[in-house]
Length: 396
Image 1: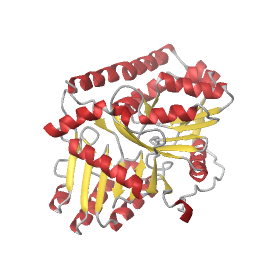
Image 2: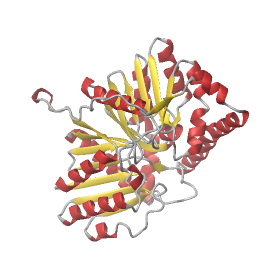
Image 3: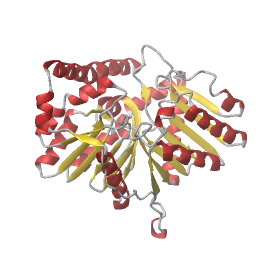
């Protein structure tokens, strides 16, 4: 596949004296940039390190991260690690023994239980010294190492220098860390969190924290507000199954003369999700929405650009991320950051195949359409039903 040369994204926006509170933002393109930057921040940390991830595996990347965290703990840094129990199902119980011996802390979020297995922590987060934060779609696993084209999954992260943001993320981490094992006190906190689902992420807030429940999450509410006046919408997501309202908002942008482009997964680690997403292609293409599928590697990046506003973080564009998981997204609203996101999107398009409406319609068989519809039914009806049933039982 021939690709034209695309300029490198602006990696960092320096804080001017007139805007001391504006965060310095650096895009991290693929694991080859993400993990070295994280290791550098861990090595420089002097007081605290908080690492939260959905998947952590016992591989080269995981062992290198363990070594860096253990070394930090030995020099007196407070180190806490939180992983999701299902996402990190294959991680050996003794894996973090060196960190624990050095004085660090480790917990699994929501150990497997038949009445609450739908409650998952899908966030990816590293906070060092309550000053530097890392957000994105990356987990700590070997498949995320590489350039996203010749090797490794295609992913994206962002490094943010902001004491205010880091303090908020640290506080949020501490809440989930206390809740993680679902002891009695944490259980009561979980029930209180459920009642306050819509109280976080107020209008004007850049940090959008989502927890399980009904109604629009802070991320969804921010999207609705931004899409009302959107002219250019670019979305990168590996798992695409938005709510009906979000689909209608995207279609409305096109009908009002705007442009909507989606970069979705051509290769996937969750075939059921891909089948469900493809059940929507015909209607979206008919409405004028452009759909592209990323080809070289598995796509795992999460990025939304709406004009000069950019959202990055852990949330996919599907019902589980929007309504059922613990997630976090960060909103950035300056032209320089949006330009960096635009360049990243252009890179992805160079390695993506455009789905043409007529070719797609002609290629669909009865068996293919049947599989798409059943996948859509399972992920939009069965999965939310089971999860929400568990949430209702937890509130009793």
